[in-house]
Image 1: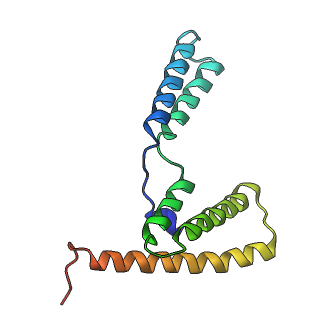
Image 2: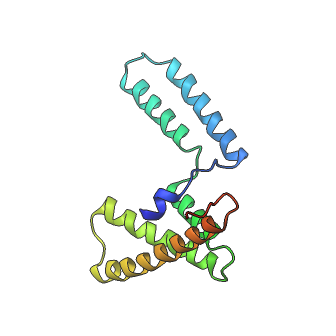
Image 3: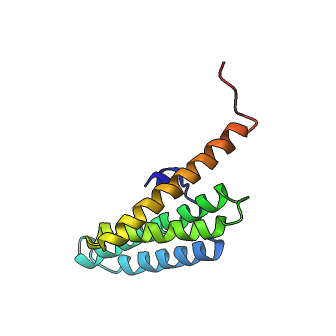
Length: 137
């Protein structure tokens, strides 16, 4: 969740956006043929809103991009970014299913702390070296 707060949303590719627009238009057309307050119309409206949310990459993808871009010069940045996704998936399993093997969770917690620390330190160094940074006297 620490990395999630730093991750920024990015749009999906133009092809994916066009497909989402097509589906939203199809949903709207179907909805127009239904009584406005019917269960089907309400469900289609909810589905249309869900599609609009999908224009941006998932949080999972955002975390991967954050770790990869922050650790980019490091030789293992891609591996660390992939591992961040695995840790996020484990977190999702715990949140949505309510259970994770205790040994796996303990190991993941230790690894997550190290990855977050490494990513945050790299981010702080990058920000401190940025031209817009002013030293405080």
